Length: 146
Image (cartoon, rainbow, N blue to C red; front, side, top):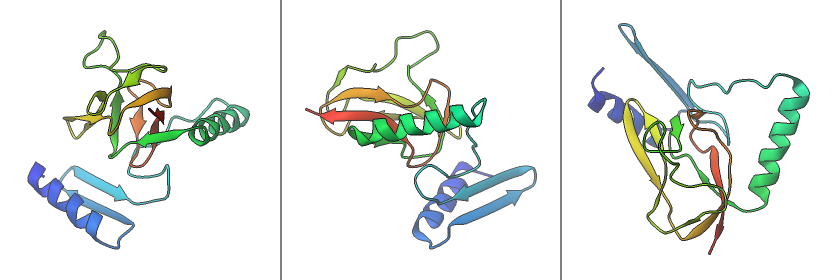
């Protein structure tokens, strides 16, 4: 499947009333899903070691999100905190990010997409680890407007 075909499929899907779509062409398969808050696409989070850890982790995310504004992932992909392996992260918890400053990279379909701050803010918390898969609408950063 050509990149232009994939982009056209995504545009169609975004405008449609569909909640899921799966397209197969030869050995290639694309699955898109619109769902509430944290679920979308074919990526599945790595489960916690136990149910207790999953509950603690979920409550920590809920608490962090409630304590401030958050920046969500605008797409499905892989979160990268730094421009390259071994490089310093774009931001750390406690940093002040200026409007337009790169906060992270999300790799989607081999394309590196920079995510920038929409306004001047303090990074209160980072909710994902380097290399983690992220979903559309998933909170990535808890921020405080300055």
